[in-house]
Every structure is written in C-alpha cells, then in structure tokens.
Amino acid sequence: MVTLKENERLDDLEIKGFRIIQNPLYFCFGSDAVLLSDFASPKKNDRVMDFCTGTGIIPTLMIAKEKGKSYEALEINPYMAEMAKRSAEYNNISDRLMIIEADIKSVKEMYPHESFNYVTANPPYIKADSGLLNDEDAVNVARHEIHLNLEDVISAASYLLKQKGGFAMVHKPFRLPEIIALMKKYRIEPKRLRMVQPKRGTEPAMVLIEGIKEGGAFLKVDPVLIMYNDDGSYTDEVLRIYGKL
Image 1 (spheres, helix red, strand yellow):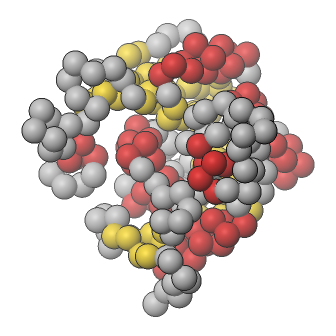
Image 2 (cartoon, one colour):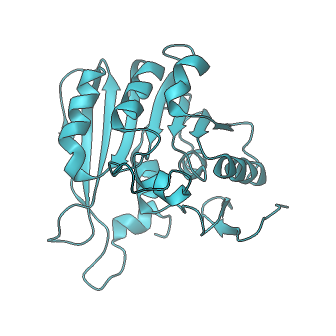
C-alpha cells in the first residue's frame, strides 16, 4: 500500500513491478532520466550517489536494472524528497536507496572525501537569469541553475568519488565545452560520450557523458541515439531502453 497526497499519482515503470509517485504540479521525470539510467555503468558492488534526484527515478531504475549495490540520493526540495522516500518504501528498496533532503553544496560537511564509487546527475540545464525566476517554484528549480550551477555539481562529484570512480551525467549539448572543461578541472577525465537526437537529421537535444576520476585521456564517442522514427514511434533502441522490446 502507498499513501498518495493531493494531486499525486502512482506511475508504473514497467520493470520488475516498480512504480513511482509523481505530482504533475511539480517536476515529473522525462526521457533524460531514463536514458541516463541506461547509460550509466556502475559496477555491481558500487556505492552510488545520485544528485538532483527529484522523484528518485534514476536510482530506482538502476536498482531495477541491477546496477550498483547501494544508493544515496540528494534532493533539496523537502516535498520531492519526502515523495521519493515513499516511492522507495513502496518498492521495498529503502534498504538500498536512501533519499536525503540536502543541498549538493553541503557534501563536504556530510560525507568523507572519496566515499563513493560512482555518481550520477541530471542537474538543471539552464543558467538562471537572476530576478526573473521564482526560486520556490519546483519546476524552475529543476530546470534552471537557481540553487546550484554546473561547477557545483562536478566539483561535488569529484569530492565524493574514489580514485578511478565513475561520473555520469545528462545535459544539453550547447554546454558540452563547459562540461568537459569543468570535468578536467576537477580531475574527472571524460571517457564516453553519446549524443541524443529526436529524429534522424535533427540537431542533438541531449548529451550523455561519463568520466573517470584520475582516468587516462581517451574519449569514446558512441553512435548517436535516435529517439523517434519518422512516423513518430520510438526507435527499437529506445524501446529496449524502456523495456518494451
């Protein structure tokens, strides 16, 4: 049983019977989170941290896919963090997934240096234009760099990662030069990159990137992931990622 509050719904993730609580008045997960959960590659016994967890979708899917051993996930919004905790309880994974209401910028006070094997992040993509955004609006906080910026995310990941630990993130392609520069600044060597296009012939809408702390300089560029066929249906690879093929 699960207790749903006003405007909440229980969505079927279509994998191992897992479901997740969402509130459409807040920020619901999208394809970026699903793609990152597939792209990220923690080892079976890794201790994994998820930044900006929102509903807890990324660690939930990764547990369902038997990636990693234990997860902790940070979420700054109190309501979203509490909702994610209820989802973990519903899915009987609270022993593997700990949701923590906290600011990513506080990780140095919360954890010892180099205490995780892997970090994932689906951070806000858009630089905030100060004065125009409500910093209490959950959608604005999820989409815009109001409470943290890209450097905050990458520096926190580097602090938490053990030597040779992995970092995976989904972001927007137009920020890729900044992403790579910051990863190198904080000693996370980009090792694998994949662009995501809505359809063939369109510009990439997302980039998936994985790096290794203190890794050697070698970047593998995976084939582009195409989301939709010309008729608007999902491609076979996306169907596989979503567990529908």
